Image 1 (cartoon, rainbow, N blue to C red):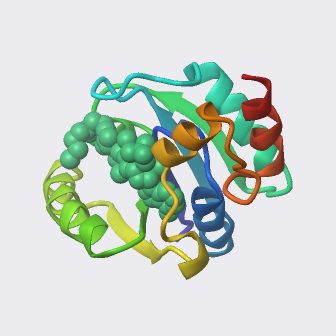
Image 2 (cartoon, helix red, strand yellow; image 1 turned 180 degrees about the horizontal axis):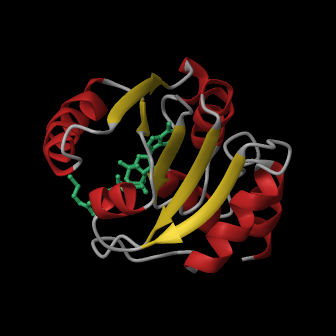
Length: 158
Ligand code: COA
């Protein structure tokens, strides 16, 4: 069976932690879609179209990676678009605690037709989050080591 996987998130912006998950997930999936979501609980920093373009730029070397955007319920997007795997990254115990109930609830919404798989974030990226990147960048701190090069260039312009 071919693996068509979704890696969803706000990616505001994509960090090296996300990039690491994409790189590793792309090796175990036939097709990986990075799904950029409008999260109504978060105020966006980059417009959704810009986030999508930046991720396309950062991941262009991967032939089996595509970038899409969506809104609404994750499970609806997964069910409606023929995904059979959802990829999530785990940085620490707190992520684990948050992810387990979400994966269990989603499993019901997927009618048990889709597996959520977890990749452990590489230790050198475990402390990174998009909000920390935004905060440091806004205060003119150096985020070069935290984000892919094209995103670093974009953050420098702001
Ligand atoms: N490396 C670096 N940072 C990471 C990371 C990794 N491997 N994994 C997660 N993060 C960071 C993200 O950058 C984000 O940081 P921020 O809060 O500072 O912006 C934070 O961890 C949370 O990431 P994530 O859990 O992926 O949240 P999200 O908002 O990016 O996306 C969805 C979460 C898309 C899965 C969730 O909002 C969703 O499913 N929404 C749709 C509505 C829905 O279906 N709800 C019911 C869910 S059961």
